[in-house]
Length: 585
Image (cartoon, rainbow, N blue to C red; front, side, top):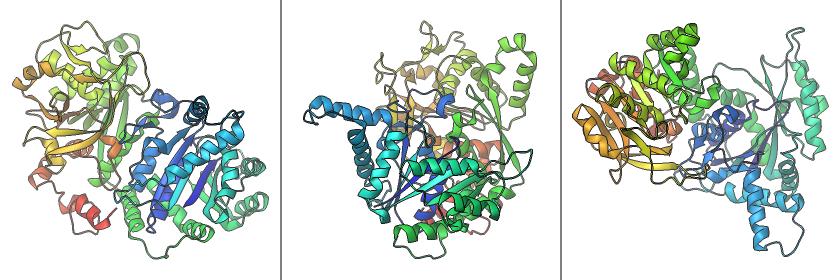
């Protein structure tokens, strides 16, 4: 097993996740099996209880693990399925060591950070690296490990020490360190400054890790003199200093690393058994990046949510929309609308904000209401859903978005004025959304319906079923506590509001569709978590097809795009699926 540790310096949020994913991708394109581990030095056991403003969205895995959004990047870039143990936190390590101590596993020894915590970290990494993440069940050959935070943080010290020991345990040929650093360019002088990188590398080397590659994040490409200066002060060859300048789309990053010989260096350094041939997977990736830069037609989607000030709160949702827009050759414009701004209160208090929010909503080609928790902004979301339903605008509701679509229909069509979710109004006479039996109150963490669950399609004419390729059922990831009340469903069905997808027992409503509407769909699961750049998620794909006015012709052609909209400029096939089959991606 080969281990690649990615550390970061100067600032957090520098792009370690994308760089780790890109390194994994270019190695995978050489025919290697790659897995990834993300280490977060915070004390939380998992990311489940975070507000999206803390670390961005909470990403959900097949096994119900609530993890850092970087694992979403790994899954999308490498097209793999990870498990909850691929996200390692200080909390998990301390919990496992304390449990061992209580059981008496340490035989009366004093339990200390070194060696007990550091050994636990190394054992966890070795064990997790062997677990297959591909559909073929083959054990991975390379494990990319991303250490969150910044070198020098107090909380990440035990991890750095663990890897200092680890490099000798697994031998030099099996371990290398990539350090991601910032090269700022102050506007006053316009010159690139190397001092932050020098200090960061010095600190890392002082802790016993010497970087093999220094990846410099910068606004403009690195000048040669700057590269040589970093090389001289940081104890590496100039070829080991890699420039990762800002690019038009993150899909360009793997190509950027490839052009600078990263694969060649890693293969020689880790003695990897691969031949350097032209690689089809990267060709596909390059074609995708080129196409995303050349798009001419535009499509706009209003994203009506409550965490819109921080785009990472909806990272997977935005990616799923981008994947779908790319598949239909349109440039995507997302209009972020804070749902509270659509509510009548805002008209009284801040009329300008209110009118701007409505103007954005009314000018969008489609409306998306994503998941969320808590009562704030829910009435604004209901207003947006009502507008989309009445004006026949394409609409997709995800999780809470689907539940609010049910509330909106109950209020405005069935005439139940107080219809609501018991999450927001426990005393409602018409509780159309209720608490779920799987949830046990009292504890916040890990009490939801989480992970991959099966949804059975109950209708043969469902639009979503056709978009999924006319399948009997789909397996998608869930993260919710509340459900549509099954006892009231017949009232909705009589008025053309159909629950076309339900769980295996037929008790939980999973998919809604409305008659006489171009595209009015709600899903209880989170389809964005399984969207891939070359295989967009069907509910989002349907939303963008409808927003671009192409849904009907797509369905009439048996779910194939016309050659003009086809997935690839040079390909004869006209659907993403045939390209994927050919790619074995």
